[in-house]
Structures are given as C-alpha cells and as structure tokens.
Image 1 (cartoon, rainbow, N blue to C red):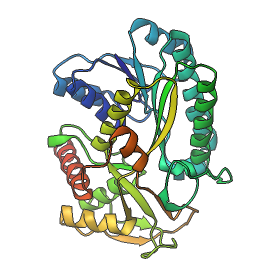
Image 2 (image 1 turned 30 degrees about the horizontal axis):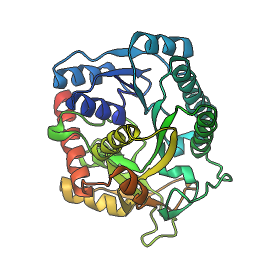
Image 3 (image 1 turned 180 degrees about the horizontal axis):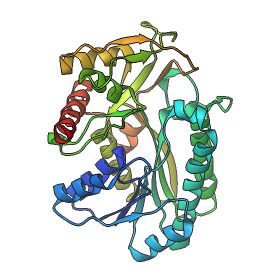
Image 4 (image 1 turned 60 degrees about the vertical axis):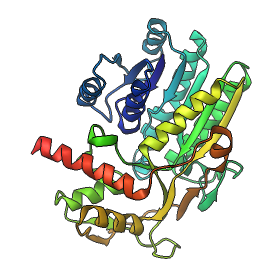
Length: 335
C-alpha cells in the first residue's frame, strides 16, 4: 500500500488516480489546506471504489503514527507542501514551519514503523540559481534569499542526513518543473482558486473572462524579457514517480535526486501557446510591483532518463489542451 501526503492536491490527486488505475492500493493523508473533499468524491467516482482518506496535518506526528499503524504501508509519496515562490516572501514563517516540520514528522513516523521507501517532490527552483542547463551536479546557491527555495534546500539536507544514519532507506528526490495539464478526458485536474498562484490558471481565467488581464513582469535578461521556466505535464510527473518506485525494487540504501523538467519556454511563449489553444486573446499589462526572480529555471533531465528510463512525453500543446478542457468543465459544473 502507498501513502500519498497531500493526496487531494493538484499533483497528489493525479498520483492517487494513476496509482489506482494501475491496481495499487492507496491511502491519502491531507489537511485540506489547498484542497477539498470534492476531489475525494471525484476520485472515488472515477475509480469506482472507496479510497481510504485521513484528514490530518502531517506535522501531527502522533496522528500520523496511527495511520502507519492502521495501514500496511510500503512506500510514501510526499507531495504535501507550500509551493509558491512569490507567496513565501510574504509568509516566510508559514513556509518554514509547514515544509520543514512536515518532512521531519513524516520521516520520524516512517522510521518508527519501518517504512523506508520515500519519493519526495522538490522543485527545480531548489538550486537557487538561474540556468536552463541545471543538472544534479549543479551546486545549490545557499545565498538565495527566497524562503521557499531555502526551505526546499533544507529539506534535502534533512533527508540526506537522516538517510546516512540508517542503511535501509531508499529515497528519490524529484526536482520538478512547473506542472501543467490534467487527467485524460477532463475527469480530474487543477481546481483553480479565485486567486491562482501559477501562470496557466491565471491565463485561463483571462481566456474565460473571469479576469481582465495578467500582470506580467518584463525585466528578465532573456530574449523577450519574461522569465523562462520548465513546463511538465502532471501525468509525466506521475510517470516519474512510478519509475522511482520501480527503481527502488532494484536498489538498496539509495538517496538520489532527479531533475524532472519538461520543455523550457518563456512566460510570453506559454501565453502564446494558451492563446492558440483557447482561441482567446490573453491581455497582459506591465506589473505594478516587481520582485526578484530567477531569469531561467530548466534542466534536460538526462539523469532521470539514464537511471529511471524517464523523459517527458506529453507536449506543451497537450498540457494546455488538457488543462483548458478540464477548466472549461469545472466552469460548466458551477455555471
């Protein structure tokens, strides 16, 4: 059985549904901070079966211990985290408290109950530096001032230090790009908040006239002055997680990080793709306030291809089409 933390969030719910589709048994833990029970209802409806769910905060170690005692868990996929680079500047304490306390509580529970297989979802931003050629040998820039980036760097340090003390651990740290897309046939996707934090949901709000425009920062040292990012389909992320779990079967005492990037595009280029898919103009205006951000974040993910046999299969157009189809379906439901 596989435990998925944050299993009702955007990435987590797709991981759960993909695991169920493969006949795996899953238990979900989520505190509903970034999700709701409608996602669980949808998962159970699609899967046609009851899906065990425990509402708890991963930081609550005694409650988490009970979940490990109640279910026979073989591996954990840790997707629960606060993930907004911009928001973390405004809420540093929340980000440090949530992200660091979560991994410590989770690994303590795993140690206590003898569960030693962990797939941890990190971010390509963890390097703290600007490049489209990032790779697992790129050193972290520990001088980056962003609380989210620093919290992810610390989490990786915590994981590595813990693994050194116990030779039964198998850990895969997946450093993921910007996740886009939705499940096939629009059965599941990202439930967009009224104030989304990511560029694609923001643009889709403009495409459906839920929003007038996007504020766009155009100060990057790139060809079109907008930042360049790696975009990856949520189902490609699921494939990378499954490849990691399979890889564990042939490993003993490993702790490896893998870049899970997709296609590197500028924000302007992704907006052009969204315009083509939706047939709508995506109006942008100059951002009224600016903040420091890394100009480029991208990786060719060659290590994941070599060791896990993984590479991104789904195109940028497919990501946008799938997310657009799902977003339209949610508007029809609520309309």
